[in-house]
Image 1: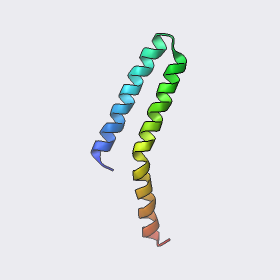
Image 2: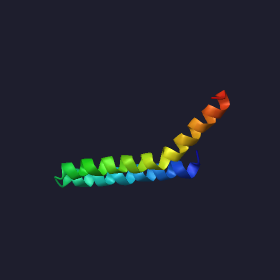
Image 3: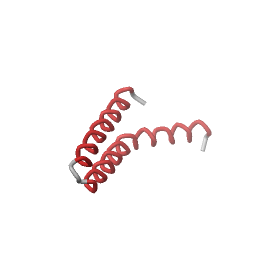
Length: 64
């Protein structure tokens, strides 16, 4: 896993946390929840290729 990937995921987390707090304090809890879910989906989409690479490496290591 690249260090850049970790920084990108951390940046997404910080931005989502700030947006979540702003939306909750303005009384928009539903939009805050949707923002959090969207941030989670974006982060997961970024690491799906890394997970696929991990499974390929494990598969080739054990000869399956």
